[in-house]
Length: 489
Image (cartoon, rainbow, N blue to C red; front, side, top):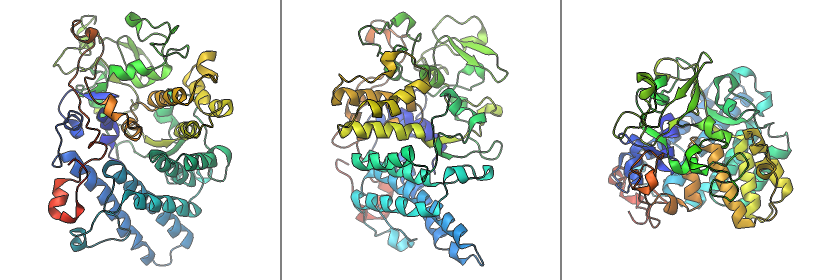
């Protein structure tokens, strides 16, 4: 369903993270404006999805040949495959807009002349598919343990809500989310009790997880934290890290933003009294890293502070193997991982917190945000995160729609940081043209005469008249001139 490497490195396509070494998944070429239709990421993304669609078509066109098969079992397999096909088409339209669309396996000759279908038509089909397949899928509560990870009614509903969300169809977002919030006909979901625990291997397949990419230790694993975690705990180097812009977005424990009057924010103690989700997601100077044996290890990132040689490996040094921003990654660290951080920890693609956040956003856009909606969505999410202050938890009726929109958008960023969703959010909000233009920053370990000492990273460029859609890859156009091209490319 997903490429696990892109799950992580897509964060650096957004303003959440920065790749300071190499150009993983072409994120620097894209964010710095050095991309064109020949850029490898575009053809790789295109091919990834169409390979998935091809596999689905072959399966769907051959499964009925199985002799003496149980009809209900076959229908369920077909529904699962149709879900995956819809998933692939959805993300194709997100990146490329209009795309070649077909629902049967086409020949090589046909693939060389097919034209693109308008996005609206593809989306209409996706919605119809995701609704139709629900009759063949089980609810999550009926799954035996050995079937954990298989596609359910709830997954089809949640994906349908996300498709509506990404296309600003607020009324349908509400109706789809309410199916999961108010009825057990589509499954039973709830926020998991611990935010950091949500990403721990002992809590896989918990009641918040609606759909994930399943991994199995030693058989199907990934090891990207080998280049994302602190070096002193066993990582090889650091090639992607969080930006200061992400760090600055986290609330204070009292519920106020750092630049809000009365927040109590102290730049010299910027990691104290902050949203607990920050510590569950990122590693900063002075962080207490919990090792597999349960013991704590202090991470030293500020230059010239480490007490020994091993700890010194994590210190920020420009151009070294350590972090380029002054931060490391914590989320998805698997304490049971094998050598070189090879992990079988599942990567969550849809979870109940997102259903609540989608619902809150849609209700606000429909001017229907009220205390009841707030309490069932943002208050519940912040309570789970660890907030206790009334200012953080209670509904503020003085906020107008625009103010509430900002609160919701900031909450999404904090809740889902480093889960691969930010790039889609800033594209659909049309804020990429703002947050992806100019210099991103790291921690305050740089030249004090430049940007007040916050590390100035390489400048980013986003063309609002072109970059909200990726170009049709040149390699595909060379094979099929009928594909045309997106505006500006």
